[in-house]
Amino acid sequence: MKTVPNGLVKGRVLARKQWTEKLFSLEINAPVEKYLPGQFTKLGLTNEQGEWVRRAYSMVNHPGHAYGHDHLEFLIIADDNGQLSPKLHKLNEGDEVYVGQKPSGFMTLDEIPDYAKDLWLLSTGTAIGPFISMLADPSLKWRFTNITLVHAVRTSDELVYQDAINSLSRNLGDRFQYVTVVSRETHATSLQGRIPLLLASGAIQGKVGRTFIPSESFLYICGNPSMVKDTSQTLTDLGLVKHLRRKPGNFASENYW
Ligand SMILES: Cc1cc2nc3c(=O)[nH]c(=O)nc-3n(C[C@H](O)[C@H](O)[C@H](O)COP(=O)(O)OP(=O)(O)OC[C@H]3O[C@@H](n4cnc5c(N)ncnc54)[C@H](O)[C@@H]3O)c2cc1C
Ligand SMILES: NC(=O)c1ccc[n+]([C@@H]2O[C@H](COP(=O)([O-])OP(=O)(O)OC[C@H]3O[C@@H](n4cnc5c(N)ncnc54)[C@H](OP(=O)(O)O)[C@@H]3O)[C@@H](O)[C@H]2O)c1
Image (cartoon, rainbow, N blue to C red; front, side, top):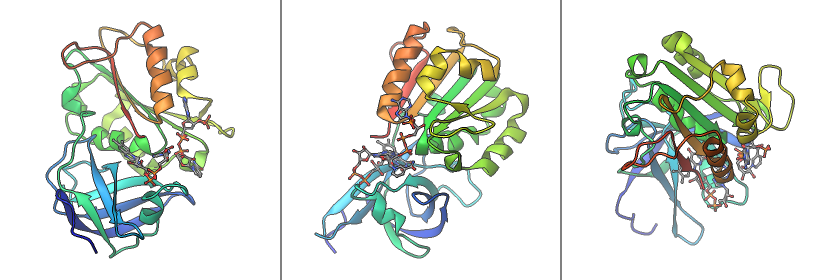
């Protein structure tokens, strides 16, 4: 094997869970620096030519997890045409995998402006992961008056982490709402369609029973880049403002590719 690049440390797979044929979670132990809920790090392996392939993956578990911040959980979708994700898909308990030592990312709770009391977390596919980490933060108990998690997937079997979400819901009580969107089949308890159109029509807000208040609402948008782009446009059309560190606004985003 070629020399391990700077910044990668050796980790080991502790457990894996298969949600659907392509969607799985890995629990990995690695000596990484402490992360903030919502952040990501790199996972890396070598390819057939011995070259390192590294990609970003978000931690699903909260850093205050009972097993410690060096016990990391990732939700991953294997893209058959991709370089790394099919290799991660083949990993089993006990296998080695390399992990970025220094987590990064600005989609974190401390980046949310103080005035925000109404938090919306909008995700597609595997991008629900960083939101599950954030929702487990103890500050959520007092920091926001309303918290809405929206998860959009193609089929209902991709509505993962139901147990974790039920437990968060019990912990956060009436302030927490969970809205699911399924695009490619009808599902009794989910909206059908895509997030930007369901926001433009008011269907998501209707399901929650609340609308956006520019002086109170803050949204994080994460996942498919075209969803992020279209949702940002819809929110702008609805009178909300993109958040910048130097000029606080209502929404910020993270693209997954
Ligand atoms: C900040 C950040 C956090 C990320 N967190 C996660 C995560 O928690 N879980 C996860 O599965 N992926 C995550 N990704 C995507 C991940 O880094 C890889 O891009 C993905 O696993 C594909 O890598 P690959 O080497 O298999 O494919 P590549 O050889 O790089 O080919 C990738 C192609 O697959 C598509 N693609 C990439 N990622 C995704 C995705 N997640 N869903 C749908 N299509 C995709 C794109 O069309 C892209 O052209 C994240 C990306 C970023 C930038
Ligand atoms: N999910 C699978 O079963 C599956 C199987 C094999 C391979 N893959 C590959 O894995 C990758 C990830 O798939 P994924 O299903 O997790 O993610 P995805 O393709 O981003 O789909 C997740 C959700 O985002 C929606 N979406 C896509 N583009 C959007 C846009 N512009 N605006 C708003 N919503 C949008 C999808 O709706 P639509 O359904 O309307 O697009 C779907 O509800 C893809 O590269 C895919 O090719 C996925």
